[in-house]
Amino acid sequence: MTKIAVLGNGSWGSVLGSMLADNGNDVTLYGNIDSVNEEINAHHTNSHYMKDWKLNENTKATGDLEAALDGAELVLFVLPTKAVRIVAKNVRKVLDKTGAKPLLVTATKGIEPGSKKLISEILTEEIYPDDEDKIVAISGPSHAENVAQKDLTAIACASTNEENAKRVQELFSNDYVRFYTNDDLVGVELGGPLNKKKTIAAGILVCKGYGDERKAWLMSRGLAEITRLGVQYFGAKPMTFSGLSGIGDLIVTCTSVNSRNWRAGKQIGEGKTLDYVLKNMGQVVEGATTVKAVHELCEEKGIDMPISEAIYRVLYEDADVDTEIKKMMGREPKPEIRL
Image (cartoon, rainbow, N blue to C red):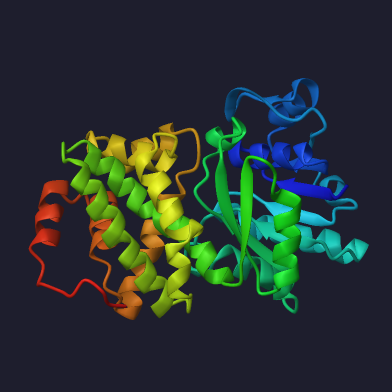
């Protein structure tokens, strides 16, 4: 039995924590909403985020970070991107006090606004400046709602240290979720947040009445853009984007109503403003923040990402969707395969 602290008891954190408890681990969820913690402990439910579903009865919840980290051999971050650095600083204070060196795993899919850094980079800076190999990222085609129902899926776990990736593979895998190791930490991390932008576009376009070809175009050309940014700016391996965290995640997020980014895009396509959608979604729409970060990167580095730039203009400059589509379709002809 491994003692695991899950930082973040929203939908994905609760589902992963429950899954890890199903696998025989000692799991404590950490969150800052007292009513959610109390409900998990008393009823093994989390109706604020996951209706009509029960967590493994052995999972516990607390609002005390020090208590959650006490004795933890693995710490899983499942927090909104904007909260990761703040919580990481507090984790470092606790670990400095206890001398513990747990394995850190990130399931957060985001790029930090301003710094444009990935979650593994934040965790390295704030917790393990000399131990990047103690950080593992997990990402792949997985929605909390589906994994909660034990639907079949596969997820990549990546680290610069092969043994740490294998350790996560061993702890997380079971008969309905299969984990595959990968040595491209940056590439695996990038797929999720970059795919969320395309998912917003997929939601917007569904309101325009286009056929299935629209999905194929958006996903295939979107993948080309994601790969271009990953390779040119972050130094990721091109093949990683053909895997679970790249095309796998892109397919499921662009086609599933369970994606909050897809639902956000659909509402924008129906005429609602971004501010309205963000205020009324009830959960964090990470893709909206990523769109802005990627726009800044494209401007700084001159990276060609026309779909991403069109999404930015629709979200943040009130551009007309039909006008942006015409601009993209009327661009100067280009070869299909290029980085």
